[in-house]
Length: 128
Image (cartoon, rainbow, N blue to C red; front, side, top):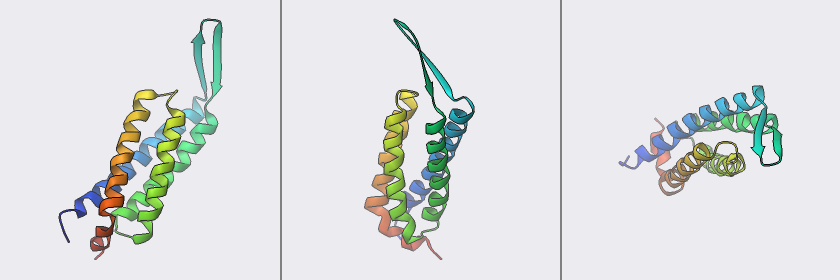
């Protein structure tokens, strides 16, 4: 085991945290499903519930796969890479609703991808 194993732990823990934040965002969007935006000609209304369900599902999956990554399961690395990419793409679509938060999550997703791709082979040493 080398010092780079910490990157895998980091990736797993950040995925769990990112997943929990997605769950919170998703639940908020589901229960507060209308967004009103003022324009020069009036108000626009958007229904956020569908995106809320997307964030909720991705959040739950991120938590589960983040735990699996932290345990050093090999299948979890590939699934995690796919999920983190999907999460970053959904954050791009969500950027109009919450721009600063979405940009922060995308940046964190890039760091997690780095950890999973560059140091992911070290995950096997996490298993007892």
